[in-house]
Image (spheres, one colour):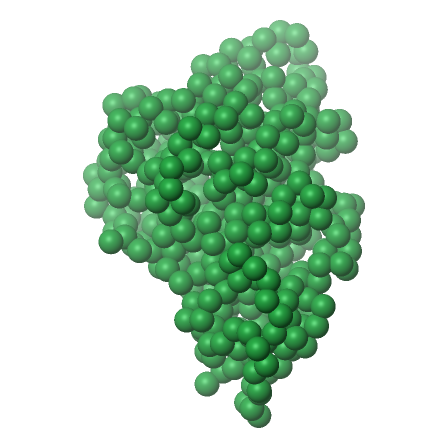
Length: 449
């Protein structure tokens, strides 16, 4: 039996921090707290001065695999995730081919089984013409159904209200939506081109992908959810008006609530003041907006209006981010720095440590109904992130593990450091470096009863 013993740690257990030891046996947490003796077969790590957290679950990544492996792969990005204390990820359907059939889903699951260093799950995408596939897919195999309600590329776009109702009603799983209104964005784009020609400044991005476009689409999503009874999760909320709108639906906890929202990493950490400094490296959809919006999103996470935090990790090749506005791809990276960023928000006093951690662990597990993950609890899978809360960590080019090689956090110094990561009882990152050897990621399991 494989055993790992973490000694003398500060252990985050839901609503409190306890001091003591933590023992894992094979894939699971066996004991938490007190002084636990070690036998000759147990690997022991001294965690004095370190904080042991549940491994993070990033509910919102674009790992580009299959079809865009020049940007990223499940192999490369799952390793970047582990270096940042993210032990599980849920990948979006806008790959090539898109994940809109059971065959495409099966292929991605097969790729992940062979290549993922972290635990994994995938969304099924709605395309407007794949209703029978959505109905037929085994709900235990998907994180949820992803619906792009506007302003995206390819076939993954659903704007017809009848098709939206059908997609919302296809399965009893979480409906995760990207909310922007295409006609408004198209109108704003034409106006910007008339004003600036081919030289649109990057700080016009939140004017083009405007707050009104987000609010209008989110209002429609809520209306369809209320009409169908679907469980709705609005991804990457970007405006204070949307946060305020979601306050009206704070019934129940993260597991039982019908309508909820996500705070994404770019909107938690940046504002429109950062476009001049970061340019295309901050261009993402929905656009990062004002500091007032950022603060409302952070407060929404603290108050529980927004139940979860994810990254919207969306890597592109460096040349695709280096052009002018019109030729710059949209998307930010972040899976390696989600935990560090949440810890920084807690250090600043903008979030409580409890809210920061739960937003990317227990709340994700509850909202998506993931079985036995997201908490440090005896009998749960041993997914752990072990952090030095007072050792600063500067992001350098050599530090970035994502295949694309860039980050909007390049040069930034976080106030804490991820030291070790444990996946299913296996030490996958030790002293800040990946441990070579076999893969330890497993398919996430979902409670669909």
